Length: 598
Image (cartoon, rainbow, N blue to C red; front, top):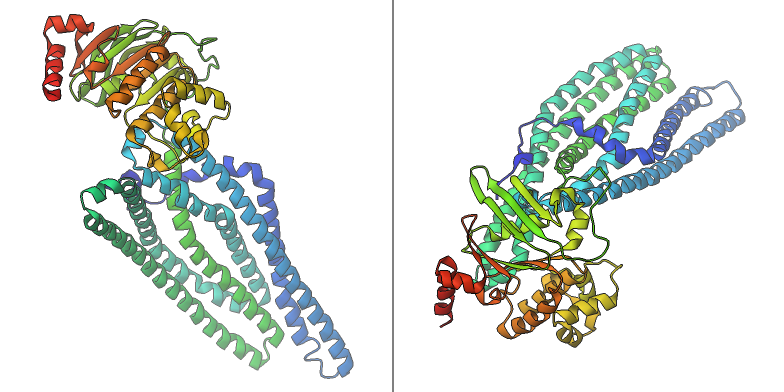
């Protein structure tokens, strides 16, 4: 595994994706506006506390000539006001936290749902380029990082900037000279931030890239744990995982180092400013040029200035992770959906089930430019016919079948189903009418019932049961604890390969399709099960068009027509008897099978 383009570390963060977040935020814009209003009210309350303290110090505390009772009474009023703004600040903070957290979760819920839906509709080539573990990282941890950006990152950072400006204005009104001294240290913090920015971006991209590779490796090895144990490779696999884990940890250590240096330098600059402020401000109080209460108010306002500067530094940490993750999320959104959604709103579908013909007209296809897999392929399966496709490994048989349900698009020529190009069909309608049974069957965690109907509740139990009866699987299903409701473990671990394949046939037939596409569908079934299945399929195929790829030539001898593929071309075509009599490639393959069986 290697890093792909989205893990390149040297390019600057592209904030062009931020406007694309707006459609997700727009439905909740009023709630976000309410959060901003709460922040502004909190800032006003925060400014009020030092103002009250200043007037308490320069008022009743220094009014030596007034009666003690009057001074105490006035001090109580200031204390009450201070207590009121403290309670108000806590309440506003609580409300802000609740609103922003709920806003963020609603946006993230929408992003995650849209992202998962988009992944389901991306092309096969995209999933071949990106391991499942890596895509899982995008939907899980990357989306959670985006939550930090939505919930508090952007809004809080914008408010911190406004707060810095507001406090600086207040400082200028309180004491111009002290304010100018305070502002003079700001460029130091800016320079530190600029120097830090590039390394922080690189470090965060490195962390996300290494973590995605580690997750991809983890998902792959957990899925292949049986092979690992069968060949005794536990130590080798664990060593490789430890290497990836160490690489991720080193990337995190690099990130921690950059931020530790950044926070230490910023804190040093602010503390140095505090020392100078104490010296110049304290000297002014001692000379009588400033009131003690006014200096205390200035000092507290300076503390309010340092707080958002530090928070912006901490938010930079969060925002870097969020920006890196958001880049990756919207890179997935940028992947085109396949097939692209139709805009004419006129999907083609028969009113009821009927056999649909399948025709290939001069079809050309290649996975990579200059390496054709199918070369000017043409043939026709009339409605109700069963066409078998045989040939050596790599001849293009599975590729040919994937074009029928438009899992891929041709590079040239046309694939017709029911007399119409598959590109003119609505994809969902086409795939309901063309059922695929592959050799590599995937079963989901859940019940037998849901695995056959693929969680479509509109398909009732009777239809599922009938499809199981048709393929001869009802006996073993009823023998399971719970029958149709029996739990299927991940990937069908508790079922035999033959049982899983029978469920695949039932899954194909439960939607009552017009066309059946069988890709080595009986390769993993024992001879006894295959004999039962062939009998059941004879009835199931009646009135349906079928394209059958088979390794066992004995299973295709009764097909209406047999096509022999070699290097992406049809080199022979005819019935079993015709091809045997011809003595060509098919006859040779048949003899090889007989010798192997012997």
